[in-house]
Image 1 (cartoon, rainbow, N blue to C red):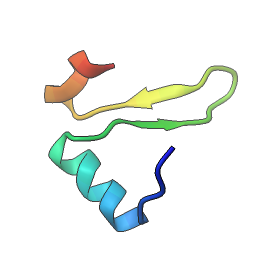
Image 2: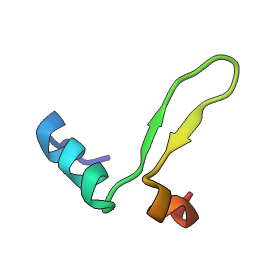
Image 3: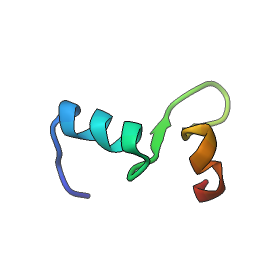
Length: 40
Protein backbone atom coordinates (compact mmCIF):
# COMPACT_ATOMS: atom_id res chain seq x y z
CA UNK A 1 0.00 0.00 0.00
CA UNK A 2 1.52 3.34 -0.98
CA UNK A 3 2.08 6.03 1.61
CA UNK A 4 0.55 9.44 1.01
CA UNK A 5 0.31 12.52 3.18
CA UNK A 6 -2.93 13.20 5.02
CA UNK A 7 -3.43 16.36 2.93
CA UNK A 8 -3.03 14.40 -0.33
CA UNK A 9 -5.42 11.70 0.87
CA UNK A 10 -8.06 14.23 1.92
CA UNK A 11 -7.78 15.92 -1.46
CA UNK A 12 -8.17 12.57 -3.23
CA UNK A 13 -11.31 11.78 -1.21
CA UNK A 14 -12.72 15.25 -1.91
CA UNK A 15 -12.16 14.91 -5.65
CA UNK A 16 -13.47 11.35 -5.76
CA UNK A 17 -10.21 9.67 -6.77
CA UNK A 18 -9.96 7.74 -3.47
CA UNK A 19 -12.28 5.97 -1.06
CA UNK A 20 -11.85 5.94 2.70
CA UNK A 21 -12.26 3.00 5.05
CA UNK A 22 -12.18 3.30 8.80
CA UNK A 23 -12.73 0.96 11.74
CA UNK A 24 -16.09 0.95 13.48
CA UNK A 25 -17.62 -1.53 15.88
CA UNK A 26 -18.65 -4.17 14.99
CA UNK A 27 -18.28 -3.81 11.20
CA UNK A 28 -15.72 -1.79 9.19
CA UNK A 29 -17.26 1.11 7.30
CA UNK A 30 -16.58 2.54 3.86
CA UNK A 31 -17.16 6.16 2.95
CA UNK A 32 -17.55 7.85 -0.40
CA UNK A 33 -18.94 11.06 -1.76
CA UNK A 34 -22.61 10.58 -2.73
CA UNK A 35 -21.76 10.85 -6.43
CA UNK A 36 -19.05 8.18 -6.02
CA UNK A 37 -21.12 5.60 -4.10
CA UNK A 38 -21.02 3.13 -6.98
CA UNK A 39 -17.28 2.68 -6.37
CA UNK A 40 -17.90 0.93 -3.04
